[in-house]
Length: 224
Image (cartoon, rainbow, N blue to C red):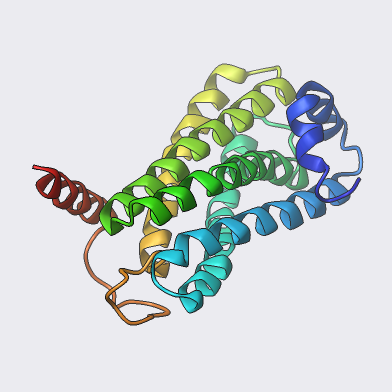
């Protein structure tokens, strides 16, 4: 399967796709295609995210956004696999990886679909705090819809003992979200204020959630 057609297969024929994962059909190719396509989609969106600062920030964000999702995947994959195994799951590690990558790939393509909107708002109303909150909102929304594919896939592939493993899955999703936001904070900046010089990384300190709230109140105070 072409790497950039895998997302169409997932969106148009998700039941068939989940069937193939459950049966272990060509998992290595599916994993490869999803990795390539999701990294490309995130890289393209990263170019838009960094546009608020400079072309160097755009290139930096184009690299860091795919890295963010890949590192979060590597950190969180063992937890989901071994806890499912503990409670009787018959899913193999490649099957678990394929299902998580399904969520990431859907997130990536939905995120990329918002790129023209994000760029439009920056070009027509270049407010840095609004731009940052807009992109955080986009990634939160697309991440939510992406993870619904993981939930659907897990329920379809594992038809026995679903109640306990569904609880485990939702707990894992919370962990995945916290790890992802902390990793995003560690790899920052992804945007870069227009008046600041380009920085590849910033010093440790602060908190993602506090920073988002500060941006919200700064934006609100500017509107009042």
